[in-house]
Image 1 (tube, rainbow, N blue to C red):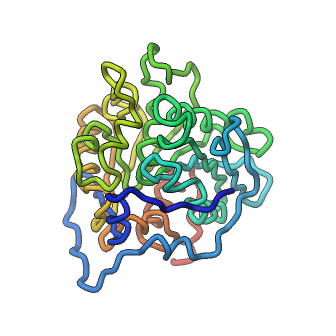
Image 2 (spheres, one colour):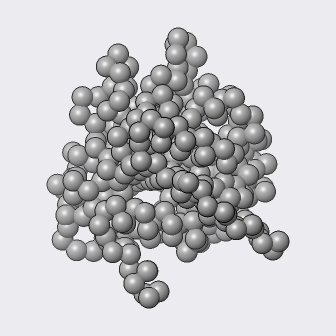
Length: 321
């Protein structure tokens, strides 16, 4: 497994240097506490310098070295509830791979939850872009159904979480039943997700493509969705597939300077108007890295939401009491 790569394009590199992240709040929004003057957001090295935990198994769903899924299994006989996990990195393999999520995956494993941590070919890799990046995410998710018996996974209790660009892909995985039959990404029986948590995500690709202030830049969106089609957002941008019919939560750090905060507020408003149950959770004094760093308020929020949906007691909350 190649280590995490942070060879970011200029826009993202500048944002990473500032090392901040965005946020969200449960609608209707309540006042969010102002950040303290002493707040300093976490940097990527604050996370990656930690000892990297390792998964229990790795599954291949294709021939490419990125077409892999790491499986994290808690102790016990199972069957285990499952979190499908999707890493970010601006949809680019050179920026990040699934190992960026190892610490969060290990934290969930310790809480009695199995994690299906997927990887995919980014737009900068042969076969990535459209439809490859999307079909990889879909195949990786559906592989869970194939491997469920071997790893004692409970396919009746499956939720998803994604960070940054992975937040978009996690929501898109939940939207797959809404894909038109004419789309090459359509599948008759996609993995059913009961709930999705997006951590500082970019669900609206059209808005992202119009927003030079997003940390990934706008060119990468064109690479992701393709430009040779009449309507490249019809089967790739999540708002175009609303309502998803799946409850959704967006968790965002209020001091995120990589992902514009309006990406979260605008999406939740559209999802709610379309009839979905979508909530926005804003975490003050939080940047982009905190969203996937155990022990932070942002990750505790995300973890609590995931465990509640899976019906798993939060042992950390029990200890706190």
